[in-house]
Image (spheres, rainbow, N blue to C red):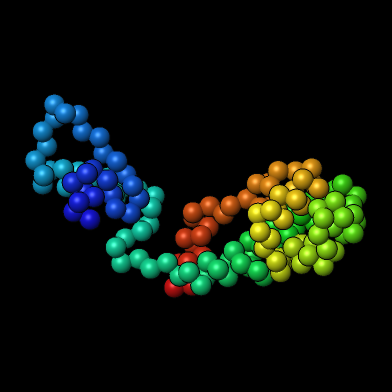
Length: 145
């Protein structure tokens, strides 16, 4: 941590403090400046914070809230295009059971299958499987702790 502060960065949120070469700031004042800036950062991480990886796996993994939300997006898009499950499975070159499991949130597909499903649905992969925000993941981890 001391090395990170000496470089002008926070060890946890990568905040950079740029000091011009003409400015000379004594080390104690520099440390106080970076400590003051860290108080206003959005990042809730502290040296004692533990991330509950199991809670995040439960959120983003099969049967998690994120997987179910993404599955619902796939289903809505499929229904908007008036595709049956069999049509989507044929267009994405996968099985009907796989598409059904994805829509129910029981399966988080790998990237190649996400891409095939997105292409079959004439949509972008990021629209169907958007990454959760840092705040969402932090809140899930904090709720479980």
